[in-house]
Amino acid sequence: MSWGTELWDQFDNLEKHTQWGIDVLEKYIKFVKERTEIELSYAKQLRNLSKKYQPKKNSKEEEEYRYTSTRAFLATLNEMNDYAGQHEVISENMTSLIIGELTRYVQELKQERKSHFHDGRKAQQHIETCWKQLEASKRRFERDCKEADRAQQYFEKMDADINVTKADVEKARQQAQLRHQMAEDSKAEYSSTLQKFNSEQHDHYYTHIPNIFQKIQEMEERRIVRIGESMKTFAEVDRQVIPIIGKCLDEITKAAESVDHKNDSQMVIEAYKSGFEPPGDVDFEDFTQPMKRTVSESSLSNSRGDGKYEPKFGSKSKGKLWPFIKKNKLMSLLTSPHQPPPPPPASASPSAVPNGPQSPKQQKEPLSHRFNEFMTSKPKIHCFRSLKRGLSLKLGAGPEDFSNLPPEQRRKKLQQKVDELNKDIQKEMDQRDALTKMKDVYIKNPQMGDAASVDHRLSELEQNIEKLRLEVQKFEGWLAEVEGRLPMRTEQARRQSGLYEAQNTSAVNSCAQDRESSPDGSYTEEQSQETEMKVPATDFDDEFDDEEPLPTIGTCKALYTFEGQNEGTISVAEGEMLYVIEEDKGDGWTRIRRNEDEEGYVPTSYVEVYLDKNAKGAMTYI
Image 1: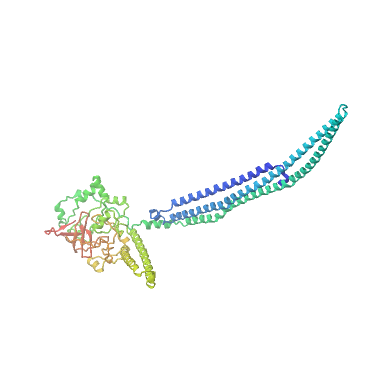
Image 2: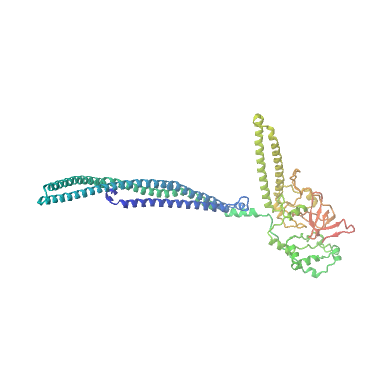
């Protein structure tokens, strides 16, 4: 099966077919090129998609990626980035292995095709030239034969005519002979040209054209094989990245299987746990008592003398009328939660004796306070701090010791701060060590540099390290305070207060015992002990540690035993004499001091207060 023998007369069709084959090859190149553009566009879109959902640095989103589900999502984003890279590899390989190779091959193919068909056209032109020569020789032979025949007929005519001279007859005879000779010559030439043409024609159709067509056939077959190989390469390029894409998908599956709902739930607890306990039951407010009794100033002042129980009239009015207070005043109540002091003991106290003094009725907590507890999710902070710190908290400035946070969150923040400071210390120490080595090199080889030039920098590093260490000590002190590592009150102090109680071991449990409020409505999460961790006095000391103690404004006598188990309170024994440093501001608490180290709040109804400004008599808060 050869185009030279089977298609010897289809030169034009072969030319069209081979041109069509080149067009197909160029069309396939264009197809692969568009495929590579799609792969690049797809890879770019995948990368942009992955980048779009990546957590931003130093943002809240970055903190959210500590959960297993979000970490799995982050792993998916990273794998999608690698997945996009494989599509870029596909595009690059197709461009180099298919588009580049086929583009060069098409150029070579066009040149080869042009050469073959040029040879074919040349062969055709040669055979056409031979045919024209044959036709010209044939026409010349035919013309000479006709001329010789006419000359012969003219000679015979002249010879038969008696009127024609002999000379004319001779002339006609010579002309006839000449024409016959010319016809013979034309015949010989025509015969020679015919033989030559037949030979050329035989070579053309049996030698030259088959060879040319065979080369064209081989060229076309190579083109077909090449396009098939390119299609195979097209598939192989995809197949080569399948294992890597499979690994990406396996990593995504592995990340999905690593999602642990229990662990995420526990991390939510660790992230938002405040360390406080839920609020207790709301006390019953008895509004029928003021209706049965008449309250006066005399009964109020003589309540302990006549043994009659007289409740506060203000308690009733506040508890009864608060829903009808003007909006501004009601909002101030809802936004300033207060917890009332505990009531005096029902037994083992003077109120238990029929003729003894009545136990004063505590100021009940309005429902608005409890309503505010449930409506606002802000945890109460239970330690009493200085006025200066309270003002800073109200102004929104975050304290350095994170005392505005719940105990558990504060512990985490302090630990994080300590870790950061330790990292900074390590960096400074590394720089110091490097400079020390450099100084040693300068000392050994003075020509390399001046050893004194690094002394100033070494001094700065030493100062920075010392400052950072003091910072670490300060934050470790606060951290120890939160974790319950501070020393508790001494046994002697507890004996003086007449209280033997179990101490809590952590700041979380200490702050979570009860929800007590300070008289001024400010909250903090410091431990119940007023003892502070001793830190060397530096520029980094807490600005609130140098406060002057409050002066005494009177004395008081404990009417009942009070066990101060909550933050900011102090335990007292019945009959104990103490100093008053802050009188009741209307919330039912009085601030007292036992000695320089022990002070705190006790319920006003538990003590009988003697203020210095009222030296004539005693003022009792009941």
